[in-house]
Length: 402
Ligand code: GDP
Ligand code: MN
Image (cartoon, rainbow, N blue to C red; front, side):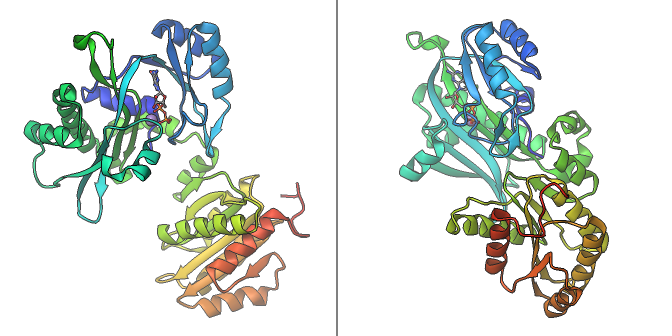
């Protein structure tokens, strides 16, 4: 579960990491009140579970109530890279002396924890990492060892925190680690971890977490009663909420091709293949969603999946990419025919099967002679066909008849 900034900062605060004072607001009027409470200048920040909000114009400085309300009016209806903005956070406007970047995440290959950090944080951190990879430090916290104050201090020095900041940085690192561990997080990222204060007064300077991104491990939900406080707001996307009720692994994106597949890796590759096809065809067509049906491609799962994907009005074609393993493709084919009969879609569905019983699955589909179902033998060809169909809706895809 990806938390919004206003939720993530609660966890940082509980771990004792300094954050600016801030108030969450869901409406323009509330944002005005929040700004008056926080004081000026303040920063109006769109809440969406995605980064690069600053570059998208969803993080802006306001000097008075009018400005705060005008900004909230602009930011509240925004979508950022397909993610709906859910309220704004009105935060104390700090004057920034320097921006650091620090994150802790799980490293699945070494089975320990990765600390990524750079003294050049901020909104351009990816660019910095590309141009000056040597400035990004990658360190580890051993899963079975304790990570204590001395380790944190050594790490802070190693990262390149400026001398005066090392002590406080070590404290922040230690608290970040505890926040990560105690909350069963998969990611705790602070960017910027800002040095704030009066440039002429050394004693006024300190580190403060101006932005936080935290992802929690859903598998640990059972031992965190407190997570219910995050759930209502973390699933405002109506498609994702519905998928969750049905137990489907679905992520809503902003393209036009609905994608259904089995296995997270295969589905991700399918998203890339669709985006690649959209690029070569120069239509900019992209995937409308990620949907992993996992091992259980029963008729019900297929029907629920197709139902969710088709309910998205942006969807203009569907790509179904299944590698038969335990689930055989002939079962998937029968499930798909049932689902098509049930939902009676008016748009093309492109299918690619491989693996267990792929040929039988495809011949079941061919025998149905449904003009809406197009069969392709490779992922590449299927993605091309789905992207093309989405760009120029076919005869069968009559607008408005869905
Ligand atoms: P992101 O773009 O989604 O990562 O959103 P951030 O919350 O990190 O904001 C983007 C940028 O806005 C930061 O890197 C800062 O440079 C700037 N920013 C955020 N909060 C403040 C603040 O309180 N004061 C000032 N001056 N700038 C801020
Ligand atoms: Mn940020």
